[in-house]
Amino acid sequence: MTSQLRIIVTGLIAQHPSLGGVTWDYLQYVLGLARLGHDVYYFEDSGQWPYNLKGGPSVNDWIAYDPTPNVAYLARVMARYGLEERWAYRFPIKPRWFGLPHKKRREVLESTDLLLNVSGTLKRPSDYRQVQRLAYVDSDPAFTQVKLKLTRGQTKFRKRVNAHDVYFSFGERFSEAVPVTGHHWRATRQPIVLSEWRPVMPARNVFTTVMNWTSYKPLRYGGHTYGQKDVEFKRFIELPRKVNPTVIEVALSRTQHLNWQTDDWSLSPTVLPLVRNQAYWTPSHLLASMGWRVVDPLHVCPDFDRYREYIESSKAEWSVAKNGYVRGQSGWFSCRSACYLAAGRPVIVQDTGFDAVLPVGEGILSFRTLEEAIAAIHEVESHYMRHAKAARALAEEYFDSGKVLTRLIDEAMNTASYTRLAESRR
Image (cartoon, rainbow, N blue to C red; front, side):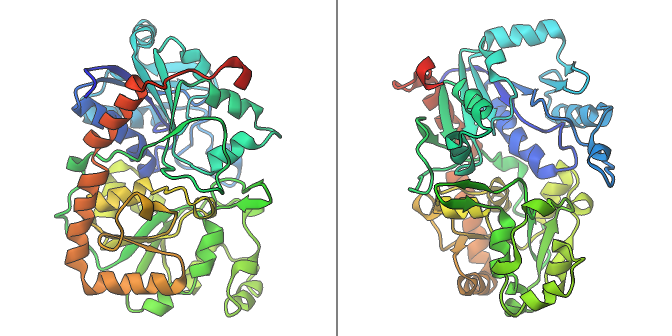
């Protein structure tokens, strides 16, 4: 293992204080590194406006012009784990730093060995070139690579990515549907701090997941469309009625991007007439009418504690993936699903090619078709304890933060092929 390093982790914890899963996505990097003995700091400098917790009917109602609640949430999370003096947040609307004093922040930057730009959340990574090495951690495989190949409107994005020294991706085995970008993408996956997830907690008799219907615009490249979860979910819209009395619950965000949603052609012929007669329906209306139990994530998992409780109280997870992940077959595996595994909850998730890097059949069950999804649910219901035990074992073997982060750091700092991209490629 690499000796103790000073490491900065980037993220979006303060930006999304009501999304508990987002907190865990970045917090587990910080906690995992700290428990390995590294001198770790968390920096949030995305340049994106933070969300107002109350929201409203217009976009402006969701912008937190006063970041006090967002900063307080971040400070509370960090203090929980003894990291109260190890975070910095830059408010972008009226530029101002919170957390570390300016002098200490500058000292940290000038003495840091490695910066992990998780999900590419830094607005200007070039501002952090004092750091010995900058590592880009791609949590959105296929979409990231397509954006790098698109020439229209993506020049700034490519420049941001190229400012790094070494590249990692949750895409562990890119298919031909993922374009070559000229970067050496090294395989990694979400680190899970296993001690934070409790497989002994009592569970409801409900399969669950937490999701957005759409997250951003579909991308088009090479004659293909890389879409969102709405594309894939519609293929399985009749699932609850096929597995009754098993209950499937979806914690579905109220946020909708109407212009980004796919046409109704992907709905089955039995469902399409119903939707066309209900023009006012939201995705929640559609799912509820087809037997899904729909809940609001702002009520059931509004912060990182409640998010963990929601997962731990679930019997198992059932979920589709974004259409781009399915098309890309990159081996992507959800951070959220890895948390279910750590909580000893089996996951039934749509195939994205992860069977090439993770064992499937016990604890993790994959599906491509409605029939396979039905069979997987029946299998978990029939042999639940075997799958629950296997779920935790898989988390320990493949997602343990100690193992994942040790490998990532060793490759980032010690790889013989470490080189910064030449200016001619920028």
